[in-house]
Image (cartoon, rainbow, N blue to C red; front, side, top):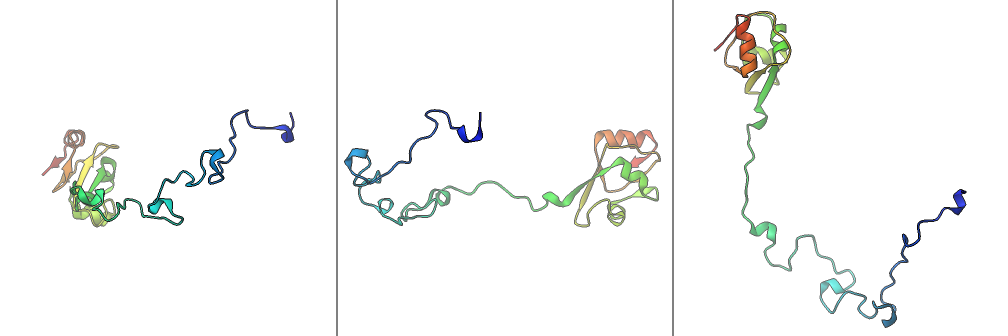
Length: 143
């Protein structure tokens, strides 16, 4: 086999359809565009969703759904991050100052990821069940 002898499979390639070349081709006269109207003319363009002046479907349907403004205000904190912090009492402000939680976060939640070696006291921070069990098992507390 040589590169100059490669051809597509038989029937895989179709000749280009030539419209408007007489009645013999089956697409003569109007060239498959029908009679009259904007879509039959050359340059007959309308934007997507345009319905000829009728109120479009996307504007007729009611608005649905809700976009929460506070969705990105929460942050997750790993257990292993808590053990790196100095001091025994940890709150959201301490997490922000340490750079563990972004400054825009209004809430934080401790998740069970990693280990904690010392007892800590959490104030104003929510905790998952697994993380609560791990903190309380080592002698820590959650307020």
